[in-house]
Image (cartoon, rainbow, N blue to C red):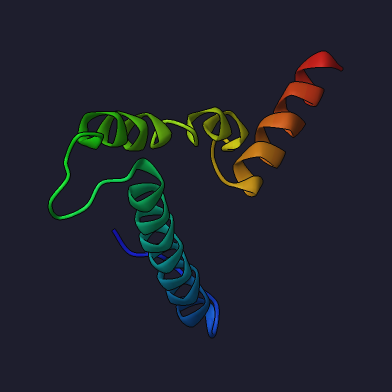
Length: 86
């Protein structure tokens, strides 16, 4: 799949992805420390894994904000609906 980007858009997307990777690593280290999981003590490993897997579901409600089609498609469909109403 090819993304059609404007000039310098690719660098911006890479910056966002790199920032997300850094944030994810930092949050993983923080949660591992807060659960007390170390290289010798795995007693809280199951709750840590469960919490991390359930936290991956947090962005799901944001999918409702995803638009269906491009803005041009939306404008075309709204104009065809308006012409049908007339």
